[in-house]
Structure formats: structure tokens, C-alpha cells
Length: 379
Ligand SMILES: Cc1ncc(COP(=O)(O)O)c(C=O)c1O
Image 1 (cartoon, rainbow, N blue to C red):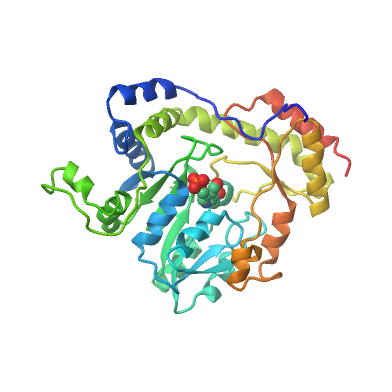
Image 2 (image 1 turned 30 degrees about the vertical axis):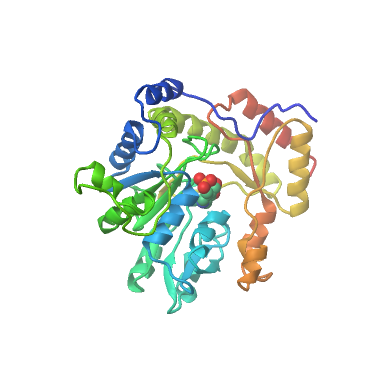
């Protein structure tokens, strides 16, 4: 085994994480919805200006809650980008939905809104755009089409906390949005997520679904004198220990985002000429988008070069990874009728993409090693 010199991801504490965990224990409240969870909710609501934020055990679970809140029924269709994580689609398929996979734009790798209208049928219920790498989808066009066809928009904003589209935070456009606090994200609690609710009519039922289908939240607010089973639901709330860790990370918002911006810009500046010389595509961020600085990726000219590059770096102790495989070509995707050629941009990008090491403790010296090695890569 080659010694790891630069890891792809490394979890680190950045402030009061351990102190807050101890406080959660001292509070005598380590189950869900304790004082730290409430502070995380307030933080997200205040910073983003959303009516309601609810922490969940993962982004996957926030998406499952969104599917329940939309009352997705067997046979309903949802439109999603083909290039995304399995949870974006699985949350809706769990309710019996039929996924319609849309290809992505070759520049931002986001859902290609030019094909959206043609994908809508009388069975369509929702559009689930994913802000890939925290760069906003073309929300003006997506919302205009969704409004005209009376479709819900649920933003999968797993990567995009604090990114903006035309000056407005990602996650504040759809009726709901999901966030991820998995260990690879800018802000983490190991595993974790949140559901942002922009349509206030959904809030009360969201609280019920998150609490096993009971009106427990209303009981704790003194709005009912006992709590009981009132709807379907599950256990989607994280322990206050995780919320304690997450709050400490939220408190370092400026520091984390500044560091990640510097990491991104160092890769970009260090690799731009090299990329142009070797036909490698770097991330593209349209002028009207402010990205979240979640990741840095390269698109190599071919699959063979991408595989060789990952191996070359790994043999030298540097861990880089590829990302999503085309959903329509997965076993499940094919069972929904997906076949080769349906989404050509996704099929190409999935072969070409490599993500470079990117985390909150990455040093300039580590990045220099990565950039130097890339520049010596024998094409
Ligand atoms: C676009 C997208 N959506 C959803 C998820 C699932 O997130 P989680 O691991 O928090 O469930 C991921 C995972 O990274 C993702 O990339």
C-alpha cells in the first residue's frame, strides 16, 4: 500500500465541536430536537432567510420527507438530472414514482433546462434539480416551466449550502430543498442533512412526518395536550450530539468558506494553462452564480486518461475519485427503460470526471504536490 500523502477528504474539528458535545450530554438531552438542534434550525433560517429548516439524519432522508410531503403516488413521474447521486431518485422511487432522467448541460453539469418541457407528461409531479458542485441550475427557466405546468420543484442542494443564483441562496427557490452534512461536505456532522421548507403550508405536516407520524412537536409547544399518531412518518431527526457538532461547524462559516474558496482558486490558477494545453475541462461557473466551493473537478479527454490519472496519483499517495455513474444505465435505471445513448452528455462526463482532494484542512503545500504531479502526468 502506498503511503497516503494527500487524502481526498479528512474530517476535522474547527471550533467548539467537542465542547458542544459535552454540553449536550450535560444538558441531559442527547435525543433529537434538543437545544443544539434548535440552534441549528435558527442558524439556517436566519442565514438563508427560509421560513423553516429541519435537521434530518441525512440528505437522503430530507429527500424522502419531501417525497412524502408531496404525496407522491405509484406511477407519478419525477424529472431528475441523470448525473446525480442515487438518493435524488431513490427517495421518490420508494413512493412508487417513475423517474424521467434528463441529460445535463456540458458546462455546469446541471440539469439541461432546454430539454425540460419536452420531458413533461400528464403524469409529471415534480422536478428535482441538483446544484452540482454548488453551482446553481438555471432556476429562472426551471421555475417558469414548473409554474406553467403546476409542478413542484424540490432542490437537491446537497453540495450547495451558501451558493447563490442571481444573488439568491440556493435552496430557497423550490417549495423544498435538501442539504447534506455528510463528512465530505463543507459543513458536517459525519452523517446529517436538513430539509428547507419554503412553502409555509408544508411545515406542520413536515414536523409530523419527521416525528414518526405523531404531533409530538405541537405537544412540546403546548399546542395539544397529548401527542398521538396522526399521519404516516418515520424517524428523521438526528441526535442532539450530532447537532452540537454541526452547530460548531456552522459557527465557522466565514472561515470554512474562505478556506474553501482559496483551495478552489489555487487549483484553478495552478491548473488553467495546463488544462488548456491538454484539452482538460475545468469547472465552469456562470457569472450570475456564486458557487459554494464544494469541490474541484477535472474532465479528462477520455475514460482511459481519467483512469490512468487516478492510478498515477494514487501510486504517488494522492487520492482522487470519480463521481456519479449515469443513473439511466444502472440496473435500476435500465429497469425503468434507460438505454445507452439516452443521455450522451452524462455518459461522457461520467467517464471523464475526476475530483481532486478537497477538504477543510487541506494545506497549500498539499495542493502544490497535487498540482505539480498533475503537471508531470504523461498524457
Ligand atoms: C446530489 C446529492 N444528493 C444527495 C446526496 C445524499 O446525501 P447524504 O449522504 O447526506 O444522504 C448526495 C451525497 O453526497 C449527493 O451528492
